[in-house]
Length: 443
Image (cartoon, rainbow, N blue to C red; front, side, top):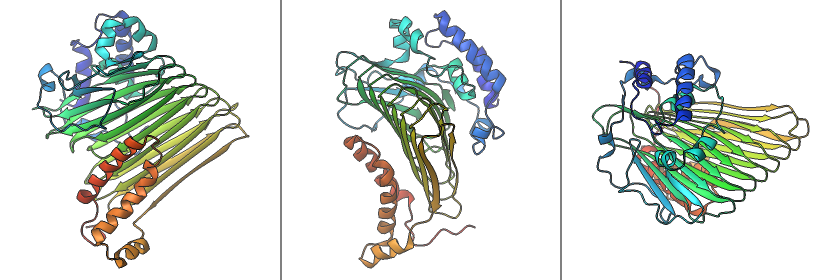
């Protein structure tokens, strides 16, 4: 059975999904199934998918996650340390024994999606699908139809969440390839503040498919920091679609660190909907072997006096491939907009490849916008300088790569999270950077 036939079969299977008894949710699922049926899986024929093909979905037969798939023994879960709350999902199933939300302050709701659908379906109906509405995106439509897990973060007006909350999503450790579809809903009310750290990690061997969708509503005057580490296993396919709306004088900061997975694609659609809104949308990627990483974004500067800054830097080794597609759209009336975009990639092998396409689409005339992209190898002069000071070549190369990526990680304003993310970078380097002293020649 192909991946497409599995997904179509899953839509018709009428298996138990969260919120099955809610008429409004059933209508949303049916609409998603209808839209996905019309669109089908995206292919390189679509401009936004020109450089990425979901080949693993053609090569594997996926099955829905059963209850037992979330019971595997899990050790050494990643964490940023002292947090206000933590949710752990294994193959899309909440693990209460590994989760803890007992330290949440008043005015903060943080829990699994199915719990919110049971306890407060009216609130869920008022917010689910509002930010990500009527988008002609096949993977979002598929998530609408099949959402089977995920979490909700709701911070009430004026509440300042001083510690971050954390979500760990673990995949793998199943006998057969499985697919799961987390749906995450984040609502930060006016003048509230919160920080979220998400870890996507793979354990064991075997293929799995995670198709996540996240809606983020940052209301007027609010500050929300969204940090993500994507470190799926070597046979995993990870697709995430994020839709965010940023209100007046609000700040949305995002950082995505991609360091694993056979194929990963992170797609974001961000609307700066209120004057004074700011978006810092940044990331770093480190790929090796035959891994493929795609970062695609669309930032809509819809009103005057908004700002955005996007910095993505990556390191590619072996035959790895990365894609960066970023577009900043400045609406006709969005005067005084200030949008910046930069993508830099370091190639450690002649076989590595980067496809980069930064774009500006400007309809206003009083703006400050810039974009750029560079690709290159390690600076041999800098390498020679370090070696002449007695630093071994392997260590010198690692130091140069760490410094290169450090510019991107400097965009993380939370010092502790920045330190944790840099630690992940440092641990990636000894295993995957040059440890031989020669440039890797193509066969």
